[in-house]
Image (tube, rainbow, N blue to C red; front, side, top):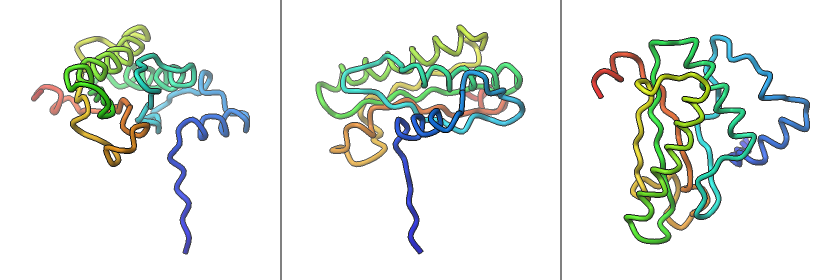
Length: 146
């Protein structure tokens, strides 16, 4: 059996939009948004329009589920100095947190975890895959323990 795994968020977004999917009008309902990773270009920390639309879905879900919090894991690739990579991963996580707060998610339910290049998703040489932000939902018990 052959299994094709497509893990390119940009291609997935383009295909979904071409098929008539409009993320801005999707109702979050009771289901958690499926997209949990957001990738960045080299030395970038700003989000694309499609990414913001998906983050608005996450914000709607969080607003409908007040017992759920979110931890935002910021990552960078291993180019550059460790201090700069830590700074860049913090900028990426802060940008995501800012979008969520603009959509009404209280700051008290958002936790930041900037990792720099210390937790690569793929091999350290796969720079594009490692430049990302990941969202992790936390229950009230886990959030209080933090």
